[in-house]
Image (cartoon, helix red, strand yellow):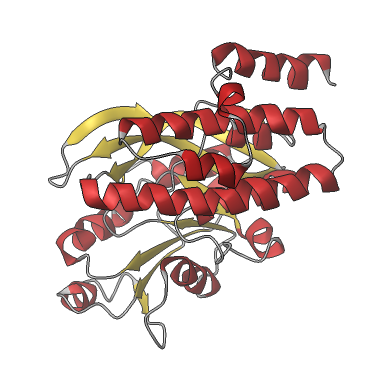
Length: 305
């Protein structure tokens, strides 16, 4: 009974997404457990966004930044204008299944700082192209430092299917505005040391995947710069601060970067700059695979070294 009263704020940042915005809003309104509030940040859209927001003005709250904000700053603007104990940022082209908030509130534990679930990939027409995707966490409840190790090992959580504890987000200074495309991942890594990650093995959201080759290549290049900050600075600092085994850090980093290397090869992008940026030997990267990941978990979970 108590969990049903947990206040979950849903924040929807939007900029010129009128094509999908109404579908997104309706998916939040159609929850089996209602959101505490639905806050939409209209980031100075020039399309029909305002007309859609006016249509739902009695059931949503609209906030408008003074000037157009970069993506991550708009997320933080939304968080600061919401009041729930837990917060979810839902992109204005993604949608929730009717059970999303219930999945969150039913699975919040005393030490949880983040709850995440499975999601579907959908196309431009909202057709499901891949079902029940998720970060492959090995445990339902993952404490620190295991949650951080999981995050590094190519298990990035979907931005469409999570909820985060407000107090934890405030403690780390909100989403990291230095990181342009991967601030969500930077945030998951930062809050990992504050509590447990809870995985719910049910599907609660739809993430809209829109592949454009020219944009995809630019995105991969920007992600490389973002992840250099995350891996070399944020994660490295956490390992040092909490006196974690640096060998685990190097192994987990190698596993993650091997995953990135495959993406570069698939898109036929030169990866020499990436290797230099991360300061890692290609021959070592190629050794990381399933067995290395298994060894990582055995060492971290069972041997407790």
